[in-house]
Length: 123
Image 1 (cartoon, one colour):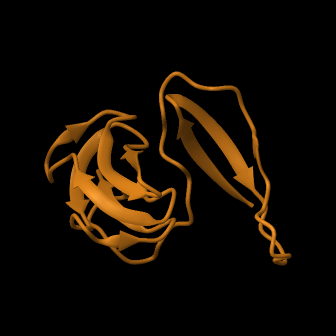
Image 2 (cartoon, rainbow, N blue to C red):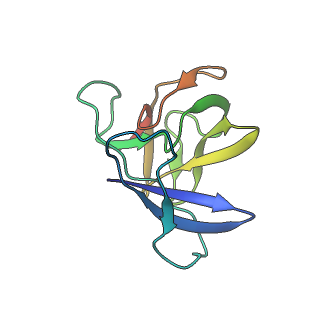
């Protein structure tokens, strides 16, 4: 199972998607919690390689890097947008999972990314 945080019309939902044998039908995604006031980073599988910092900022969905909001060395608070990914004509902010300083930005505008891809790291 994978956990995702999805924002719809300003409402943030935590959803769990169960992986299994493909039947041709999309896997159901049921809301796990009521809408939250502030978004948080979606948990994803950690990668063995990449960035300079110990805190990973990873894509919650596949898409294209639309904008980079933070710079290396910039202090960010939990919930601050670090990168914006465009998927299905929607701009999805990928936010800092906790307070820190941006150690690396591992993508460039226009890069195609998969769900769980390392976008940046924090210290």
